[in-house]
Length: 524
Image (cartoon, rainbow, N blue to C red; front, side, top):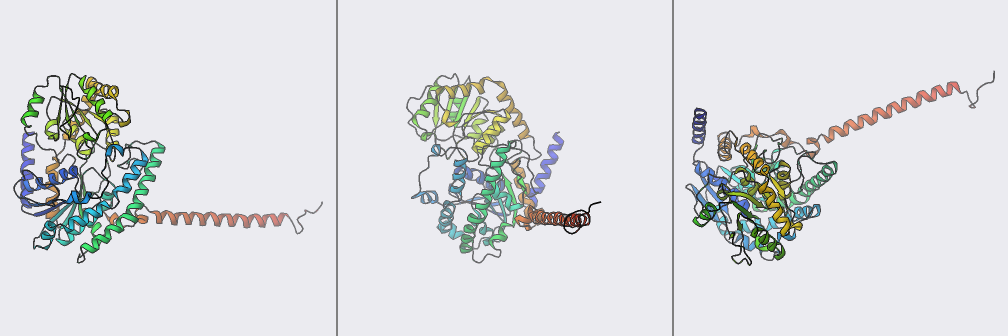
């Protein structure tokens, strides 16, 4: 076993050496912290592998590695939010209607505003006016298609990544099939096993997304692309079809097996590194928790401090009755009525914390980063989904037996306490989480090694056009063989019509033979 690992390690080192020193531009201008965590993980992994990495981001790193330079778009998020409605995500939860509204909002004017601000930012303007060259542009495919022109500007291969998995946006880039019979839209709370009506809604919702995306959203992005990159060698449509690779922060053990083309690669858990020592106060708090720790975090966008007071107090009362300690990521240092067994912190090194053996349960909103980290470390969950892919993630977790769902509207002292104690006291939840953890870790290469291998592959093979599916050259009608089915239908109609015509002819001929003129038979 060790001999095989050594051989694999030597092979991996030799592969890295073949493409060492490439210049890579990673673009993260959308201002979402959780998305930035994934994007910077890609950049740091490639820098560690010996590449020269430049990252355009709205958030500066505290300790950037070697070969890693940041171009920080200072003030980008603040300017983008000026005059915008301040979201309280707890007020945006709901079913199909909310999913519909969130989709329309996501395709709204905010992506255009972020693009304008980023392209006008003096730090990015300075880079674009420089003589710098890049071999690869790595960019998140999340309502950011107009930024694909940066690959044209720097004459570089374009690689994209998705922070949460595959979607219409990523599938269109590489011709990935997406049958709605068993692949649910990411914003619906469905899994890969749907009832008839769920399949009906999933298909209708997916087609609405496709129509809105192709006929309303993309033409607007093309306009910005043409204005910002007038000298691009390839048109917007050509660049959309000229993506070398798509990375997905997803893994089939956490979602379901999917039909990917060879240039769509799963690297779920790219942000997870070997556990590092915790800050001293957190390390002590966890080490001394003889009964274990319940960790509570609602992510980077949803703020626990925005919880309605009645819901917040329900959590505090339920926590106060536990024998376990509770660590709550809470963004306000003032939390009234806090029990003695509850510790709050505005920021927590989440993956490192979940790796601690004394953490017994994770209460989460169900975001992709958190659920992946929790399962990587084998921790069961209580899920409180609010919007986006959170409903789907939690529904899958419930069906797999390592999580229990607590709907936001049902939160009270009793339901919180019951949910926590159910997961803590039923060993099947922890057992199933450990089972998934073992499956997730059982990979020929780690997500980080996989990223380095495939980026180097693209560099070695000049963008690797051999990976691209011929589906990219087909229209929607051709890809789905709708033109073929239409001709088949016409042939069928013609054959039926011809047969009806012949039958009528024969019938009339026989009828006239048996019935002479006047329509009366002769008497004997």
